[in-house]
Structures are given as structure tokens and as C-alpha cells.
Amino acid sequence: MGGRNRQAQYNKQVIGGEGSDEATFLKYIDSLYNNDGNHPRITNCHGGNPKKVVWTLRNTTPQLGAYKNRTVLFDDDKGEKEVIKGLGEASKIPDIKCIVAQGCFECEMLKIRGVSGGVLKKARKDSDFAKKEFAKICDRSLSGSKLSYSKVYSKVKLDSERRRSKWLNAVISLFEC
Image 1 (tube, rainbow, N blue to C red):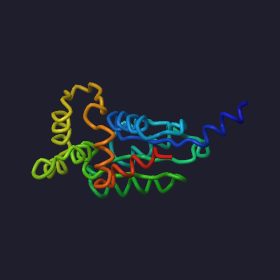
Image 2: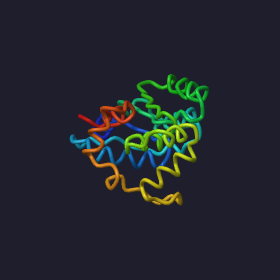
Image 3: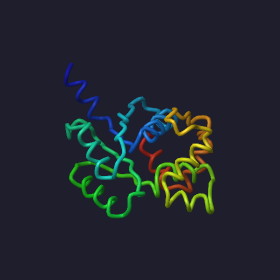
């Protein structure tokens, strides 16, 4: 019986989002695009810098053979040097894939909603501004209340936008069978 659980777990993947919003979004994408019932483990890697996010994913799933695939999402808003450190940390872990958001997660979500021009340009440079703009669009306070992605990002919208967003396409592809 124990062998069966181990085999079932091996077939799974683990996906780590940089923060709670990313983890919630990943769960929403899983509910829309995963049809085989083999749901990945989705974890919140609690932010910081890319290296810390990768390190957190590695340490929350210490058994290297326990998961077939590992994926971590992190932002490049801390600068190129930090992204390189994160990718370096990831290179030490077998079978890990990194998906890097341009700016931050909220910037990617703003692009999907069709925000462009000066607002998007400023959001790429200032992640706090991006978070505030994202909160406005989603009619959500910054106090940490849970966002219902289904109200703002329908499957139809996501399907149409994934052709234009490499980041969104990479995220959705994790869940398609």
C-alpha cells in the first residue's frame, strides 16, 4: 500500500508561487485547465528574492524523487543579479523549471487585463504601484483579502490572452494534460 502512494506522488508535480496571490492564482488555473484529476501540489514560497523562493520550494519538498516535476514562479522586479542568483539556485535542483514574471506577478496580471501605456510602464518599475493598480482593477483592498480570480479572469479571457503572454501560456501549460 505504501508503494502505491509513493508512485502516485511521484507522478505529481509541485509548483511554487512567490507569494499567496500567485499560489491562489495557480489553484484557480488548476481548476480551469487540469482535466486528468492528477492535481499538482501548489505551495506559497513566501516571497523575498528569487533565490529564496527557489530555496523555499526545494526545502518544502525535500525528497528529490518524490515529484516528477518542480516549477517555481518568481518576479524579476529585484533586478537581473537577483534573477541570476535564483536561476543559479534552481540549476542545483534536478527537474526544476523557472517561470519569471516581467516586473512582478501583478504586472503580468495587469497586462492580461489589458492595461498598457504609462500605467504598465510605471508598474514594471515599481512593484508597489503595480500591487495598488492590481488591487483597484480587482476591486480588492490591499489588506490581504482573498481575490476571486474567476470574477476578473474568465477562462475565455485567459484563453485569448495566452497567445500574447508567454508568461501566462507557460503557467497554463503546466496544468494541461
